[in-house]
Length: 85
Image (tube, one colour):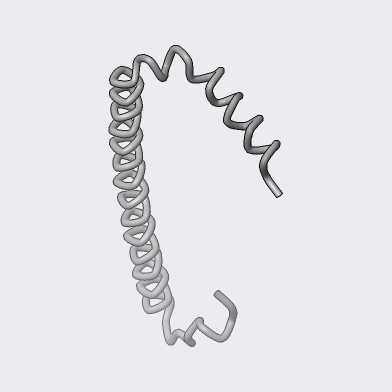
């Protein structure tokens, strides 16, 4: 906020009311932003848990892949580099 936005006040009471109203406005804005952050964090945790469950389920359903995965992945990477242009 720069000096251009501050109005001229005719009394101390008027100036006090202005600053009090402005502080309440910023306090409400802060509370809304904090609530949105909490909601976002909760959603992120839920999504992370859901993705983790899907990953565990995929690993369990592909038991054969899980046992041979690192070797297979290494073979794929080696083949990719051998055949890439």
